[in-house]
Length: 433
Image 1 (spheres, rainbow, N blue to C red):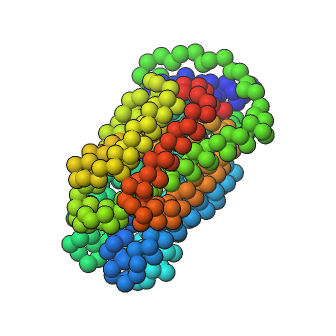
Image 2 (image 1 turned 30 degrees about the horizontal axis):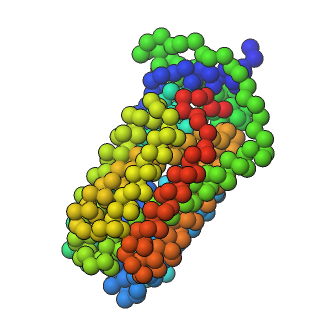
C-alpha cells in the first residue's frame, strides 16, 4: 500500500481532542515557565547587582543585551538542528544550555561571568522558544493548534507573573537574593529534562522528511486515542498546496522579522527595564516591585483569554486589538505616572502581552512549511530579539531626557507592530503542511 503524506496530515487534522499524554504539554509548558522567568529576572535585580559589584546600572543592563544576543545564536543554531535532525533532539539541547547558563549566573563572582551565564542561558531560551513553537504547531491537529500553543505559553506567563513576587521576597531582603532568583530558574530547567525523554516526534516533520511509514504509525496511534472519545470525521480531501515561491517566502520572512523586531523593542523595554525606569523616576525599589506584582496578574488573565479565543476567532484580528490596548497603556503611563496609573496600566500591559504573544507565536509558525518552520521561526524571532537587545540603548537615553519619552518609545513600537500585523495572512483553522 502506498502511503501518502497529504493523507496522513489530513487524518491528523480531523482529530478534535488532544491526542497525546499530558506530559507533552507539561514538558513544553514548564520550559516556557522557566524560560520566561529567566528572561525578566535580571530586570528586577539590576539595581542590586549594580550596587554589589559597584558598577553603573547601565553596565548591568548590558547583561540584558548579552542574553538576547545569546537568544539569537540559540534560535538560529537549534532551529537548524530542529529542521535537519528532529524536534526532540533540539528540545533536549535547548534545556541543557538554559539550565547551565542560569546556574552560572547564580554563582557568578564578577560581571564578566554574569555576562557569560546570561549568554548561555540566552542560547537556551532562544533555542527553546523557536523549537517548542515549531514542535507544537507540528504535532497539533488544525482545530487545536491555537489552543495547544496558547496553553503551553500560558505557563511561560505564569513564570513572568511570579518573578515580581519572588523578587520582592528575595532581592530587597537578602544579600544573595538575586542569586537565589537565578538558581530557581536553573534548577527548574534541570527538572524538565526527564520529561523530555519520551516526547513523540512531529508527524508533519516526519512527512516533510519523507518518513511516511513512521508518520503513518504515529498518526494511527493518535487516531486510536481520539476514537475513544467518539467517532472521527472523515479526513478532508488531500489537496496539495501550491509550492511556496522563493520571493513569497522571503517576503513572509522579512515581514515577521520586522514584526518581532519592533514588538520586542517595547516588550523587553518594559519587562527588563521597568523597575529601573520607575526607580529612576522616584519610586523606591520595593514600591516598583510592588507595582509590578499587581500588574503581573495580567500575565495569567491574558493567556487564558488567548486559549479561549485562539481557535474561535481569526488570530490576526485578536492580536491587532491587543496591540491597540497595549499602545494606549504605555501612553497613559507616560502622561500620568502616578502609583494608581502605573498599577492599572501595568496590568493592561501584561494582560495584552499575555493575550498577543501566544497568538503571535502561532501565527508565525503557521506561516511557514514544516521543511523550514523551525529555521524560519528562529530567523524571525531571533532577528526580532535584536530589537530587544537594543532596548536599553534606545529607551534609557530617552528616559534620561524625560520619563515620558522612554514610555513613548515603547508606545510607538506597539503602534508600528500593529500596522505590520495587518499585512499578515489568515491561517486560523487551516491545515498546515
